[in-house]
Image (cartoon, rainbow, N blue to C red):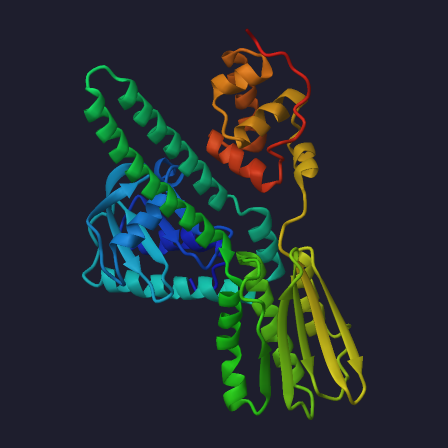
Amino acid sequence: MATAPLHAVAARLHEVIGEVLPHRAVAVFTEDCTGRPQKKAGDPAITELVTIAELDAVRGLVAGGEQLGSAIVAGEERKVCVFGATTGAILVLCEPGDATYPGAESYVRAVWEMAATRIRQQVAEARPDYLRESRALSTERLQVTAELTARHETDLETVLATLRGRDLDDTRARLLATEMAAVALVRVRAGSDLVVALAEEPVSQAFERLRTDLRPLSRHGGTQVQFIEPPPDGRALPGEVAHAARAIVRSAVLLMREQDDVARIRVQWNCDGTNLLISVRDDGPGHLDQSRSPLRQLTARATALGGSLAVEAVATWGSEIEVRIPLDPPDTSDTALRMWDLGPRETEVLRLLVAGRRNRQIAVELGISENTVKFHTSRVYRKLGVTSRAAAAAMAADAGLSLTGDLGPHTPRR
């Protein structure tokens, strides 16, 4: 577990834990990993259907190392065994069997704590490959939005059916509709908060975490680290940008401290609305060279997110490292469409899927039959390698496919 890469953590847990506590599937939920907050392994009947909203609900029902007898997972109430971790992540064992030896539970808890700690460490390191994957493949938080949209649509249809029904008088119908709408509103707001929490980190919070990381250097390292606060109302940072920024600054500060006669290092974050701007300046001899291996590694982190890093060193005046990281991913929609080899009509259908249209609405907007829509959606699923409209919409939205792009002329059916 200590050496498992992020993409293999769930599979490794499933294998190792299964030796002492048999189970059908494992699901990990961690907000540390913003690109893929859930990691799953085991029976596809569970892993392909479990949602982030379900795992977040399970997390809300347990605390620390407590266990839960049953929970809704993959759309059904199932027997589960839930383990917390000091990082705040949870491990859910779905439909566990009998332990193979008396100490199994303690063993599982120890292995899971190791895995959760390792996940946080790997995210904090912000390796370029992780940053690229997190930005390019962060489809799960978009899938949460798709799940919320589908659920909200069902809530609205239920309210309308209640108001239109003939079995209730007007007063009773209005009362029931009001109660349903209130419950739906709470659910939507909670889901919206979850999406934001997974996707973004307030810039002041991200900077405070950096300050906490570097505080020991000022106290015990002999070097004063000064912090220039970012604007408190600055734009929130995408998770992968916050991770990369902290990792770059930590490494830059440690690199500067290795020089002789460095008494003070200044760290400053700012934002121009579209980029996070980082400046790390020292009062040392001014000998930093961008060709050095450690600085090449920092440059790789910045470029992995479409950013840049520059070093300016002036003898006897010190060195400054300036970093620019764009807050929004580049527009990759054209590249994605070419990669998926979608035809013009398939592209139109996919755009409307992203916009949340149902088959009947797509048929009307494009002037084709519902059966033709189903034919095109099945081809889209196959080319994208997915099995549901939520997954297709999430992949397309993550690739930057426009919701308002020109769908071309068409004549609606009458």
